[in-house]
Each structure stands twice: as C-alpha cells, then as structure tokens.
Amino acid sequence: MTSFRFRFRDARVWRYMVSSIEKIIEDGVFVVNDEGLSLRALDTSHVVMIDLFYPKDSFDEWEVAEEATFGVSFKEFSKILRRAQKNDELVIEVKDTFLDVIFSEPSLGERVFRMPQISLTYEKLPEPKIEFTVRAKIFSTTFRDVIRDLEAVGETLVIRAPEEADKLIMEAKGDVEQVEIELPLGSSLIELQVDSPDKSAYSIDYFSQMRAAAQAADTVSLSYAEYAPIKVDMEYTGGGRLTFYVSPKEEE
Amino acid sequence: MGVNLRDLIPSEAKMEVELKALKGREVALDAYNMLYQFLAAIRQPDGTPLMDSHGRVTSHLSGLFYRTINLVEEGIKPVFVFDGKPPEMKKREIEERIKRREEAASKYRQAVELGRLDEARKYAQATGRLTNDMVEESKRLLEAMGMPVVQAPADGEAQAACMAAWGDVWAAGSQDYDSLLFGAPRLVRNLAITGRRKLPGRDEYVEIKPELIELEKLLKSLGITRDHLIVIGILLGTDFNPGGVKGYGPKTALKFVKSIGDPLKVLKVVPKVEGEADPSEIFKYFKEPPCTKEYKISWREPDPEKIKTILVDEHDFNIERVEKGISRLKKAYRENLRGRISRLDAWFKG
Image (tube, rainbow over all chains, first blue to last red; front, side, top):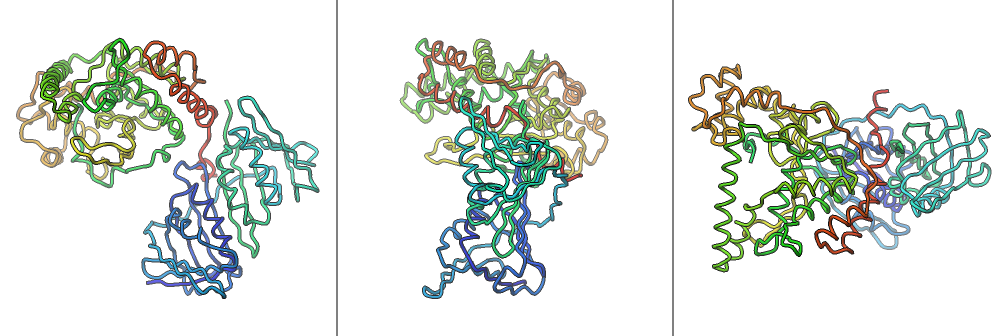
C-alpha cells in the first residue's frame, strides 16, 4: 500500500493543463519518485503524445517515500480541477485506491474532492527520436493568438522558417480564405535557431486543444523538422513542463 | 448470416473501442452487410422502410449517406467492398434467405392487419431485400461522395479480409465473423450501428460501440491456428453449410478440433456435414478465397451536384438536410481524408 502527498502553489495551473490533456487522452498514469512527477501518454490514434514533468522542487510539499504511480481518467480529473479558483493551492493525496484532490485557500479552508484511481498497467513510453532543424520560443499569449487566427480559417497549420532565420511563419488555408502570420525575432519570437529552413504541416485541431494548457504557461517552445513531428513545450513557473508531440500531416 | 463465433471469442480477444480510436485507419467495409443492416434498422415505427414518392425503398441510401459522413468525421477512412457473383456453394444459404424473407413478409402483413405494430416492425426488419438497382445506386452515391468502391470477384467479405491481410487497409469491417476465417488480421464490428440503439421489442436503449477483434490474439488465446478456426467454423455452420454439424457447439467444437490436431483430419472424421457442399471445398474457400488486386484506394473531394441528383432529384430526400450533410462531409474530407497524418510510432523506433 503506497500513500503519498504533494502540494502545489497554484491549482489553476493544473486546471488548465489537465483541461488540455483531457481533450486528447482518456486516461493515464502519473509517476512520482525522487525526481518529481511525470506523465507520458499517447492518444488512441497515436498522433499525439504528451509528456509532463514537474521537478520535486516545484512543489511546496513533497512527501513521497518511494516511487509510486496513480492512474486517472482525465475527464473525471478535469471535472474536479475545474473547481480550482484564484488563490487556491492544490494538494494531491493518494491512498489505497482513491485520490483526494484538495483545494486550500487560507481564508476559505479546504475543499476535499475524492475520486477513484483507475488501475492501468503502466508501461513507460519511449521518447520520440527526432532531429529537429528549427527551434523557436514564443510567449504563451502569442501562441494562443496565433492558434486562434489559424483555426478561424483552416484545418492544417503550415510552419516554416526562411533562410535568413529572422522570423517564423505560420499559415493556414481554408476553402476560400487563407492566413499568414509572421513572427519576427526580437518581438513575438524570443528565440530562433534554424539549422535548415524547413517547412512542415500539422493538423490544427491538436493545437486548438493545447490552448488551455498555454493559458497557464509562461513560454511555449516549438521544435520541428520537415515531415517529422513537432514538439510543443509549455514552460511553467517553477520549472514544470508539459510537452506535446504531434505527428506531421502530408497534404496530397 | 455468416458463421457465429460469438460464444467462442474470449473477452481478452475482443475490445470495445471508441470510434475515435480508429482515427486515421483505413477500414474495408463489407458493403452488402452494411446495406442489409440499414435496411433492417432504418424504418418507421410500424416497420415500413423509408420510401420515395414512387414507393422505392431508400433506407439503404439514407444509412449509407449519413453513416459514411459519421465515420469520416471521426477520421475513419472507409473503403466499400461490394459482392460479386455468389459462389455456387452458397446456393442453399441464399435459397434459405429468400425463404426466410418470404416467411417474414407474410408474418409482417398479418401483424399489420392485426394492428400489432411492434411485431410488424420486427418482421419487417427481416424482409429487407437488396435489388440490383439498389446496389448500383449505392455505388453511385458512394462514388459521388468521393469514397473508394471495390468490386469483389465473389464474397465482399473475403475481398475485404484479403485487403486487410495484404496490409492495404488496417482492418475489415463487417458484422459477420467470417472475415476472421478469411484471414483478416483485424475485424471491426458494429460500425454500421454504432451509437444509441433501441432494443427490439422494448422501450430501452443501449449504447453500441465498435468492437475490435484481432485474429492473432484470438488464435493465441484459444491455442489454435487459423486452419483450426476454419474447421470450427464449418462444425458450427457457415454460409456454405448453414446447419453445421449436429451436436457441435462452440465449446465442443473447440475441444474436438484441439484433441485431433490436424485440421484436415478433423474434417475427415466428422460424422456428417449438413448440406451438399464438400467440407474440404469449404475449407479451401475460406483458406484461399477468390480475391482481386485490381483496385485503387483513394478518396476524392465529394461532388455535391451528383449527390443531390441521386438523393434529392431521384429519391425525394429533403434538400436542406442533404446540403447540411454535404457540407459536413466536405469539412470532414478536408480534415481527415485529404492529406495523410502519420503516426508517432515511426519515430519511436529511431
């Protein structure tokens, strides 16, 4: 019988992260150990993989004696986390077959939600091996605005970096409209590294699903290569990171 | 009808899945099987099928149109495989089907006369008949929708299984288990009826989900080979020997086949296979069904005018509903059929 407990400063960060994860993946197994908390899961169609890691230092309390796992249905987990309010801290306590999701706010006291763990066999997924040729970092607000612009028009996002390596271009084409968004280095783009001026395409749907997670993030890093998956890293205050790998889409 | 392996399949070999779990997968659908399911299910409360102003049945077109849109919206890539000439061996089964339909039709008329609606609906469901015209217009509709249509030399189900075995599609889609005997590595059931369904004769509903059966898992969990499975099928009864062999149920057949080992030997020692077909011929038919490699699997942009000609002009479908369907189909085509989304698996191997 394992039991453990950890406390996180801002419950809303979890609310937003899980609200994105829920749209992509049904259930998953979190692992807690000496390093921190991690989760790796693949959607049923094998197009998206999520990879979450929070170092133990990013928690205010970390009572984990030995490596343990807990499985959740993201739909159920998200339902509860949606109750997170401003100033709420989040405590997760795992005992036996259930887990308590506790929101605590000094002036309001504690609200304890109990939900069942689901038993899933845990198998560690490998990390996709991709040689990225373009790497960029943008503010999360920029990321969300760009996705909103793109999804208004089309279903496929095309991302490309010109030879000069001074900007990143994202575009989408619909039946009649199209949109091209330029992200110049120094303003919208925080960092850009171009090994080869590559272009790649992805389904916008998955990016729309990431928008919630970006809401709580500080910055978003994008790494991709031609005809290869894109890696979208959401970086959170305190050192946490939620990564999405999305398979490429080939237009005929 | 097909062979009934239902009670033979252990729970670990079948999996209830969500439609979206099949996203990006090509599935070769047994079109006749699907059309019959639409004919049975899409009816008015008293069992009358949908009809146009000339009294021609349109249940199959309605089912085909809306169900295909559903599947494509979920990201499934359907390929429709149509039956060719039925093999000589199937004659008896076909005659029996006609007889069953005629019986059902007369019971239906009786029930209507007596005003028993529930009963009428039940019998009506068994009267569905596919005419050549209905098959041809189904193909025309699918082609107008941009769906690939494959013409099988004989059994559509066999052809779909071959295509899955060759790796040209991911799975065969049918309600019958014969696909497994024909060698389909994966069979997806319930695709024509996924969703909320009314239970027959009751005012209750159930949620039906697609069911995925993997041949290798099935054989492994039963501890047999595909040859054994075919023999078990023959013992239980196939379309070629509908009665099967007296005295054999799923359990006894499995035990018997396993105890003898050599599948062909089983057929020799079996007391009497009902029907005129030679059991070893039936075996050969399942083992090496007639299949063609003459087909092309590709999806095209839907043609709204052609769709409207068939559904609205020829068969009096409501134009607004059809147009709504077409715009859903166009969107789903752009999202899920045009362009290919690869899977991450290729990058795990590295």
